[in-house]
Image (cartoon, rainbow, N blue to C red; front, side, top):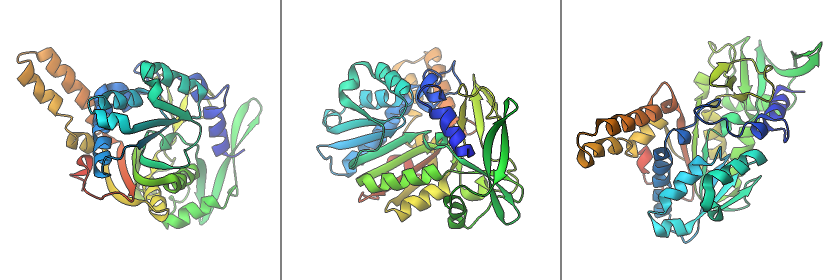
Length: 353
């Protein structure tokens, strides 16, 4: 099978896949930490940005928020909790989580508790969206084709099982979508380099553009522009495995028990979105986005509201540093696209260079 199909099976198999059996992993005691798990302030600031989108669209009586892959449900919970402070907005929001893992959907329901009446679940995108398509570390978890450049040829990595272990072999690409992927970029990985082609991300972005009638696409994810992602010095690609907060590059150990991700090619996401009818509205990193959204205000307010409370000051400061550290979560990229939506500068992108 192709590596893409192998990765699909070990992550998403309904009984034995990682996301079916490791629903509690995305915590500080699990395999990795996502921004919504650090503190509710992340979800509150994302909600503030979505509220501004709703306002720019004329405050319609119905506003869809469609989250792709809801993790443990923390982001949905914090967005809906913040919305309670703005009753007209809360009444307009129709929240849907697109989640293919039954185990994670159950975990999300437990996290949301009494707010589940405001949430719907589905395995696929709805047929019509007017509002915001939101994702946090979704695209980097899609299964990827792995390829190796051999001169002017591209060979694909296939996986077989022999003598009690998984073995990689190289063959011609399984689909013309792989050479097309790099032809559209007008770029190739360095000769002899292993790289990833996220064809599933291309298909998903096209689907999003097709069903989005009016609104925005807000994407948080780890990744790079293509020139950096496929630079000749990147010999082994970006595939990484996570197990109990340790990182490895071996996808054939702890099968079904470790997560696998590959950095997102944001050049392709932008290009595909534009070609499918989405406008490019902003591109930044999480550190800049959260600063523009006012994440530092919570620290400053301590000295005003609770003078002398140094314990609370440093607690809030540590949360902010966790989320904006450019060596960690702060390096997550933030992409804003839209359709039939005002291109007025949204707050999180007001300093977008």
